[in-house]
Image (tube, rainbow, N blue to C red; front, side, top):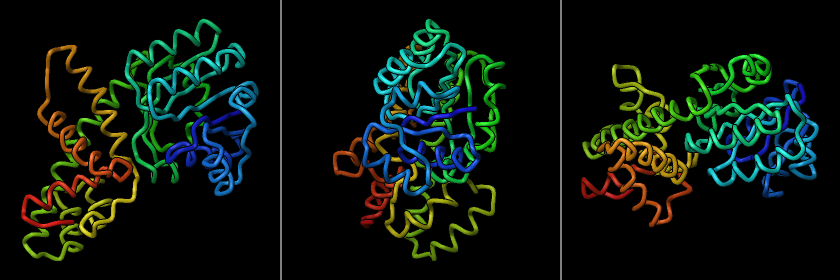
Amino acid sequence: MKTTVIGLGAMGAGMAGNLFRAGLLTQAWNRTPERAQSAAAQHGFTVADSLESAGAQSDLVITSVSADADLQQVVDRLARVMTAGSVVLDTSTVSIDTARTVAERLEAHGIHFLDAPVSGGKEGAEKATMVMMIGGDEAVLEQIMPALNAISRKVVHMGPVGSGQATKAVNQIMCAGINQAVTEALAFGQHQGLDMDKVVDVVSSGAAGNWFVEHRGRNMTRGIFEPGFRLALHHKDLKICQTMLAADQVQLPMVEMTLVHYERLMEQGHGDEDISALYRAKRPLFGEDV
Protein backbone atom coordinates (compact mmCIF):
# COMPACT_ATOMS: atom_id res chain seq x y z
CA MET A 1 0.00 0.00 0.00
CA LYS A 2 1.55 3.27 -1.15
CA THR A 3 1.01 5.84 1.61
CA THR A 4 1.66 9.57 1.82
CA VAL A 5 1.46 11.85 4.87
CA ILE A 6 0.43 15.46 4.29
CA GLY A 7 1.32 17.73 7.23
CA LEU A 8 4.51 17.12 9.17
CA GLY A 9 3.89 18.91 12.44
CA ALA A 10 4.18 17.32 15.86
CA MET A 11 1.77 14.52 14.95
CA GLY A 12 2.36 14.06 11.22
CA ALA A 13 6.14 13.74 11.48
CA GLY A 14 5.86 10.88 13.97
CA MET A 15 3.26 9.07 11.88
CA ALA A 16 5.35 9.47 8.72
CA GLY A 17 8.42 8.13 10.52
CA ASN A 18 6.61 5.00 11.71
CA LEU A 19 5.11 4.35 8.28
CA PHE A 20 8.56 4.76 6.71
CA ARG A 21 10.11 2.24 9.09
CA ALA A 22 7.27 -0.17 8.30
CA GLY A 23 8.02 0.13 4.57
CA LEU A 24 4.65 1.75 3.83
CA LEU A 25 5.53 5.42 3.24
CA THR A 26 6.01 6.53 -0.35
CA GLN A 27 6.50 10.25 0.29
CA ALA A 28 5.53 13.04 2.66
CA TRP A 29 4.78 16.71 2.16
CA ASN A 30 4.38 19.81 4.30
CA ARG A 31 3.34 23.33 3.38
CA THR A 32 6.41 24.75 5.13
CA PRO A 33 9.54 23.28 3.45
CA GLU A 34 11.76 23.86 6.48
CA ARG A 35 9.55 21.70 8.71
CA ALA A 36 9.39 19.02 6.02
CA GLN A 37 13.16 18.84 5.69
CA SER A 38 13.60 18.73 9.47
CA ALA A 39 11.19 15.80 9.78
CA ALA A 40 12.78 14.01 6.83
CA ALA A 41 16.26 14.40 8.32
CA GLN A 42 15.05 13.02 11.65
CA HIS A 43 13.25 9.98 10.23
CA GLY A 44 14.93 9.33 6.87
CA PHE A 45 11.96 9.53 4.52
CA THR A 46 11.64 11.45 1.23
CA VAL A 47 9.82 14.75 0.84
CA ALA A 48 7.70 15.20 -2.29
CA ASP A 49 8.17 18.19 -4.58
CA SER A 50 4.50 19.09 -4.26
CA LEU A 51 1.28 17.96 -2.63
CA GLU A 52 -0.02 16.93 -6.04
CA SER A 53 2.94 14.68 -6.89
CA ALA A 54 2.66 13.00 -3.50
CA GLY A 55 -1.07 12.42 -3.78
CA ALA A 56 -0.96 11.13 -7.35
CA GLN A 57 1.33 8.25 -6.34
CA SER A 58 -0.65 7.09 -3.32
CA ASP A 59 -3.31 4.53 -2.47
CA LEU A 60 -3.71 6.21 0.91
CA VAL A 61 -3.11 9.82 1.91
CA ILE A 62 -3.06 10.60 5.64
CA THR A 63 -3.60 14.27 6.41
CA SER A 64 -2.61 16.03 9.62
CA VAL A 65 -3.36 19.75 9.49
CA SER A 66 -4.33 22.43 11.99
CA ALA A 67 -7.66 23.87 10.86
CA ASP A 68 -10.83 23.26 8.84
CA ALA A 69 -9.81 25.63 6.05
CA ASP A 70 -6.43 23.88 5.71
CA LEU A 71 -8.13 20.51 5.29
CA GLN A 72 -10.58 21.83 2.71
CA GLN A 73 -7.75 23.33 0.67
CA VAL A 74 -5.68 20.13 0.82
CA VAL A 75 -8.67 17.97 -0.17
CA ASP A 76 -9.53 20.17 -3.14
CA ARG A 77 -6.00 19.72 -4.45
CA LEU A 78 -5.93 15.99 -3.79
CA ALA A 79 -9.27 15.45 -5.52
CA ARG A 80 -7.72 16.58 -8.80
CA VAL A 81 -4.87 14.05 -8.77
CA MET A 82 -5.80 10.96 -6.74
CA THR A 83 -7.28 7.96 -8.51
CA ALA A 84 -10.75 6.53 -7.95
CA GLY A 85 -10.76 3.93 -5.20
CA SER A 86 -7.93 5.56 -3.25
CA VAL A 87 -8.42 6.77 0.31
CA VAL A 88 -7.93 10.01 2.25
CA LEU A 89 -7.77 9.55 6.02
CA ASP A 90 -7.76 12.77 8.03
CA THR A 91 -6.27 12.71 11.53
CA SER A 92 -6.92 16.40 12.19
CA THR A 93 -9.53 17.71 14.61
CA VAL A 94 -12.13 19.62 12.59
CA SER A 95 -15.87 20.19 12.73
CA ILE A 96 -18.32 17.44 11.83
CA ASP A 97 -19.70 19.61 9.02
CA THR A 98 -16.22 19.99 7.52
CA ALA A 99 -15.63 16.23 7.67
CA ARG A 100 -18.91 15.58 5.85
CA THR A 101 -18.27 18.31 3.27
CA VAL A 102 -14.82 17.04 2.29
CA ALA A 103 -16.17 13.48 2.16
CA GLU A 104 -18.76 14.60 -0.40
CA ARG A 105 -16.14 16.45 -2.47
CA LEU A 106 -13.89 13.41 -2.61
CA GLU A 107 -16.71 10.95 -3.23
CA ALA A 108 -17.63 12.95 -6.34
CA HIS A 109 -14.25 11.80 -7.71
CA GLY A 110 -14.62 8.22 -6.48
CA ILE A 111 -12.18 8.79 -3.61
CA HIS A 112 -13.03 7.44 -0.14
CA PHE A 113 -12.76 9.59 2.99
CA LEU A 114 -12.42 8.62 6.64
CA ASP A 115 -12.40 11.12 9.50
CA ALA A 116 -9.91 9.74 11.99
CA PRO A 117 -8.95 12.13 14.78
CA VAL A 118 -6.37 10.77 17.20
CA SER A 119 -5.49 10.90 20.88
CA GLY A 120 -2.12 10.36 22.50
CA GLY A 121 -0.17 13.54 21.81
CA LYS A 122 3.22 13.90 20.22
CA GLU A 123 4.53 10.94 22.23
CA GLY A 124 1.78 8.73 20.86
CA ALA A 125 2.56 9.73 17.28
CA GLU A 126 6.26 9.03 17.74
CA LYS A 127 5.82 5.73 19.59
CA ALA A 128 2.88 4.48 17.48
CA THR A 129 0.66 4.30 20.56
CA MET A 130 -2.08 6.64 19.38
CA VAL A 131 -5.76 5.81 19.69
CA MET A 132 -7.78 6.46 16.50
CA MET A 133 -11.54 7.11 16.47
CA ILE A 134 -12.79 6.68 12.91
CA GLY A 135 -15.89 7.64 10.96
CA GLY A 136 -16.69 6.34 7.49
CA ASP A 137 -17.12 3.11 5.54
CA GLU A 138 -15.97 0.19 7.70
CA ALA A 139 -14.99 -1.86 4.64
CA VAL A 140 -12.66 0.93 3.49
CA LEU A 141 -11.19 1.06 6.99
CA GLU A 142 -10.40 -2.65 6.86
CA GLN A 143 -8.49 -2.16 3.60
CA ILE A 144 -6.04 0.30 5.17
CA MET A 145 -5.56 -1.39 8.55
CA PRO A 146 -1.94 -2.43 7.77
CA ALA A 147 -1.02 1.28 7.65
CA LEU A 148 -2.99 2.14 10.77
CA ASN A 149 -1.44 -0.72 12.71
CA ALA A 150 1.95 0.88 12.01
CA ILE A 151 0.98 4.19 13.64
CA SER A 152 -1.45 3.32 16.45
CA ARG A 153 -2.20 0.87 19.22
CA LYS A 154 -6.00 1.02 18.96
CA VAL A 155 -8.37 1.74 16.08
CA VAL A 156 -12.12 1.96 16.70
CA HIS A 157 -14.78 2.40 14.01
CA MET A 158 -17.36 4.81 15.46
CA GLY A 159 -19.91 4.99 12.64
CA PRO A 160 -20.47 7.08 9.48
CA VAL A 161 -18.34 10.07 8.48
CA GLY A 162 -18.42 12.65 11.28
CA SER A 163 -18.60 10.07 14.06
CA GLY A 164 -14.84 10.24 14.57
CA GLN A 165 -15.00 13.99 15.09
CA ALA A 166 -17.96 13.68 17.47
CA THR A 167 -15.97 11.19 19.54
CA LYS A 168 -12.93 13.47 19.52
CA ALA A 169 -15.13 16.28 20.88
CA VAL A 170 -15.94 14.04 23.85
CA ASN A 171 -12.21 13.46 24.31
CA GLN A 172 -11.34 17.16 24.16
CA ILE A 173 -14.00 18.15 26.67
CA MET A 174 -12.71 15.47 29.02
CA CYS A 175 -9.12 16.66 28.53
CA ALA A 176 -10.19 20.16 29.55
CA GLY A 177 -11.60 18.83 32.81
CA ILE A 178 -8.53 16.72 33.52
CA ASN A 179 -6.25 19.69 32.82
CA GLN A 180 -8.24 21.90 35.19
CA ALA A 181 -8.24 19.28 37.96
CA VAL A 182 -4.56 18.31 37.69
CA THR A 183 -3.19 21.85 37.45
CA GLU A 184 -5.28 23.07 40.39
CA ALA A 185 -4.43 20.07 42.58
CA LEU A 186 -0.69 20.26 41.89
CA ALA A 187 -0.64 24.02 42.47
CA PHE A 188 -2.29 23.35 45.84
CA GLY A 189 0.28 20.65 46.62
CA GLN A 190 3.20 22.88 45.71
CA HIS A 191 1.79 25.62 47.95
CA GLN A 192 1.78 23.11 50.81
CA GLY A 193 5.54 22.72 50.43
CA LEU A 194 5.38 19.07 49.39
CA ASP A 195 8.00 17.18 47.40
CA MET A 196 6.15 17.33 44.08
CA ASP A 197 8.00 14.41 42.48
CA LYS A 198 6.73 12.23 45.32
CA VAL A 199 3.24 13.72 45.00
CA VAL A 200 3.09 12.91 41.29
CA ASP A 201 4.40 9.41 41.92
CA VAL A 202 1.94 8.49 44.64
CA VAL A 203 -1.08 10.19 43.03
CA SER A 204 -0.35 8.52 39.69
CA SER A 205 -0.47 5.15 41.45
CA GLY A 206 -3.88 5.66 43.07
CA ALA A 207 -7.50 6.35 42.20
CA ALA A 208 -6.70 9.84 40.88
CA GLY A 209 -4.01 8.55 38.52
CA ASN A 210 -4.24 9.54 34.87
CA TRP A 211 -2.05 9.94 31.78
CA PHE A 212 -1.83 13.71 32.15
CA VAL A 213 -0.55 13.85 35.71
CA GLU A 214 1.90 11.04 35.01
CA HIS A 215 3.35 12.54 31.81
CA ARG A 216 3.04 16.28 32.51
CA GLY A 217 2.93 16.64 36.29
CA ARG A 218 6.65 16.80 37.06
CA ASN A 219 7.42 19.22 34.25
CA MET A 220 4.63 21.64 35.09
CA THR A 221 5.73 21.89 38.72
CA ARG A 222 9.18 22.84 37.39
CA GLY A 223 7.74 25.46 35.05
CA ILE A 224 8.50 23.43 31.91
CA PHE A 225 5.78 23.47 29.25
CA GLU A 226 7.39 21.97 26.15
CA PRO A 227 4.52 21.25 23.77
CA GLY A 228 3.10 17.80 23.34
CA PHE A 229 -0.31 19.27 22.56
CA ARG A 230 -0.27 23.02 21.99
CA LEU A 231 -2.60 25.12 24.10
CA ALA A 232 -3.77 27.12 21.07
CA LEU A 233 -4.83 23.92 19.31
CA HIS A 234 -6.84 22.70 22.29
CA HIS A 235 -8.47 26.13 22.36
CA LYS A 236 -9.39 25.67 18.68
CA ASP A 237 -10.83 22.23 19.42
CA LEU A 238 -12.89 23.51 22.36
CA LYS A 239 -14.31 26.28 20.16
CA ILE A 240 -15.54 23.51 17.84
CA CYS A 241 -17.12 21.81 20.85
CA GLN A 242 -18.69 25.11 21.92
CA THR A 243 -20.28 25.51 18.48
CA MET A 244 -21.65 21.96 18.60
CA LEU A 245 -23.12 22.62 22.03
CA ALA A 246 -24.64 25.93 20.94
CA ALA A 247 -26.68 24.06 18.30
CA ASP A 248 -28.51 22.43 21.24
CA GLN A 249 -28.51 25.67 23.26
CA VAL A 250 -26.21 24.14 25.85
CA GLN A 251 -23.16 25.55 27.62
CA LEU A 252 -20.81 23.32 29.58
CA PRO A 253 -19.09 25.14 32.47
CA MET A 254 -15.80 23.27 32.03
CA VAL A 255 -15.60 24.21 28.36
CA GLU A 256 -16.45 27.86 28.97
CA MET A 257 -14.01 28.23 31.88
CA THR A 258 -11.16 26.56 30.01
CA LEU A 259 -11.69 28.75 26.95
CA VAL A 260 -11.45 31.88 29.12
CA HIS A 261 -8.26 30.64 30.80
CA TYR A 262 -6.67 29.65 27.49
CA GLU A 263 -7.50 33.00 25.90
CA ARG A 264 -5.80 34.84 28.76
CA LEU A 265 -2.71 32.64 28.42
CA MET A 266 -2.66 33.11 24.65
CA GLU A 267 -2.79 36.88 25.14
CA GLN A 268 0.27 36.51 27.38
CA GLY A 269 2.13 34.66 24.62
CA HIS A 270 1.75 31.07 25.84
CA GLY A 271 -0.36 29.66 22.99
CA ASP A 272 2.48 27.54 21.60
CA GLU A 273 3.19 25.91 24.96
CA ASP A 274 1.71 22.62 26.10
CA ILE A 275 -1.81 22.68 27.54
CA SER A 276 -0.21 22.06 30.94
CA ALA A 277 0.70 25.77 30.79
CA LEU A 278 -2.71 26.19 32.41
CA TYR A 279 -0.59 25.74 35.55
CA ARG A 280 0.53 29.33 34.97
CA ALA A 281 -3.01 30.44 35.80
CA LYS A 282 -3.27 28.30 38.94
CA ARG A 283 -0.16 29.24 40.91
CA PRO A 284 -1.24 32.90 41.28
CA LEU A 285 -4.38 31.68 43.07
CA PHE A 286 -2.01 30.96 45.97
CA GLY A 287 -0.11 34.22 45.55
CA GLU A 288 2.77 32.44 43.82
CA ASP A 289 4.32 32.53 40.34
CA VAL A 290 5.50 29.70 38.12
